[in-house]
Image (tube, rainbow, N blue to C red; front, side, top):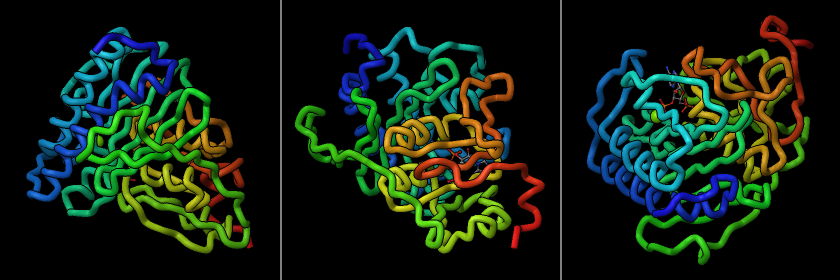
Length: 284
Ligand SMILES: Nc1ncnc2c1ncn2[C@@H]1O[C@H](COP(=O)(O)O)[C@@H](OP(=O)(O)O)[C@H]1O
Ligand SMILES: [Mg+2]
C-alpha cells in the first residue's frame, strides 16, 4: 500500500478498510470462542484480541501514513513513550474490553486523528453489528455497513449521512457507561433526563451522532483513544464534546498519559456548564 494524504478522509478510510475488517473478524472469533484476560499495570484487563487487533491496525497505519506517529492503547500500556506530536493517530483496537470479556456485544474499534490538539478524523467500527461510523472528506459524518464476509471496496459502499437530533428538554435520553465514572446523578437530575441507557464503548458517541440519544456524560477515567474518534464523528454530525466548564475536549496531553478530564458529549450545543460542586445538590 502506498502512503496517502491523511487529510483526505475518504482515501484514508478506503486504505484502512481491509485492516478494520480483519481486526473486526478477529475480535468476533475471540468473542464467540471465549476470551482469557490478564491485568495491566492500571489493573484494567487486556486480552489477546486487544493486542492482535492493535497489531493489525498499526501495520496498516504504518503503511498508509508512515510519517504520522500513533498513540495506541496497548503499546502505551507496554511502555511505549509518549511524546508531543503536532499530528498523530489515536488507536483503541478494542474499546470496551471489560464487556467483551463478559460476553456483551458492545465493543468497538476506534481510530482517531488529532492535529493541534483537535480531533480531525474518526473511524469507529462495531464488529458485532458490522456498523461503521466515519468522518468523510466533505467534513460530515456517515454510517455504513461493513460486512466481515464480503470484500466490498469503499467506492461500492452505501453511506448514510448522520445528523444529530434537536434535544427535547422534556424527554432527554442519556447514554451512560456500564463501568466506573458514569454521569453523576446530580447532572441527570439537573437536566431532568427522562431516560438513561447503559452502553459500552464509543458506541455511545455513535448513537448520539445517529440521532438515537442526546448526551453522554463521563465523570471517570478515560483516555484520549476512547474519545477522539467518537468526538470527531459526533462533531461531523452536529454535536459537541465539552469539559465541564463548557470548553472543547482537547487532545495530545501526553504529559498526563493521555488521560481525559471529565467530559460531556452532546447531540447539539452544551445544555449545561459549571463545576462538579454545582452538581452535588441538584437544583429544584
Ligand atoms: N474501571 C473501569 N471500568 C471500565 N472502563 C474503565 C475503567 N477505568 C477506565 N475505563 C476506561 O473506559 C473505557 C471503557 O468505556 P465504557 O465503560 O464506556 O465502555 C475503557 O476502555 P478500554 O476498554 O479500551 O480499556 C477504559 O479506558
Ligand atoms: Mg482498548
